[in-house]
Image (cartoon, rainbow, N blue to C red; front, side, top):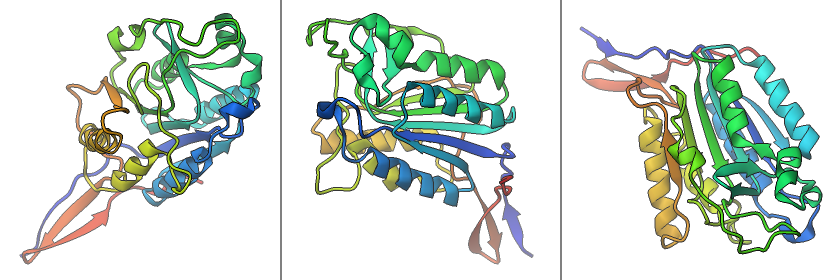
Length: 267
């Protein structure tokens, strides 16, 4: 007699927004692999039944519009993934993602007007979609931003996100620790360092995201010789495991067969 074990996903839909900022207005800030990172991760997520929106080289107003449009399509209870590859910075414990029009940022005050505050994204999603699981993957640096009017070695405190209590159902992954650089990768390679290791493990079936990103972290730390150490902030403690690539395993006459149990998404 055939026996089977299966787990039906608690998410009817899986949705993702990916942004890769590469061609910054400041020539010295331009990157090499962020668009590849977004394209490659987007393709993998689509194969895992995610409904994906991907964007490249957005200025401040375009980033705000992308978040707004994406948020408007979410249904409470979705599994939500946001991935950003580009420049970021951390000032006074606040983390920001930089649009390509970074030439507009000259002072600390300009960050609030011309950059994207990560906390604002997190709280907007968690307050409006309280039944969803929200995963933020931030593949960017966490150095103080070298403003034109602030010394490059300016000190900053890294307290806000680490000491805050994340809303239940949220999970944040930083590609590096505070005061560190997230490597854009070698020119001879296709991806940045963090994205490269994420792509190695992203498709592994039935791997809880806490285990998934622990494995990614170990790989990045080893390859960078501890110069880049990804960090994670976990608001999923006490909740059921979350799988990006959930599979069910059917056992028939001693032979295991694996098939996807994800529901197809609305296009």
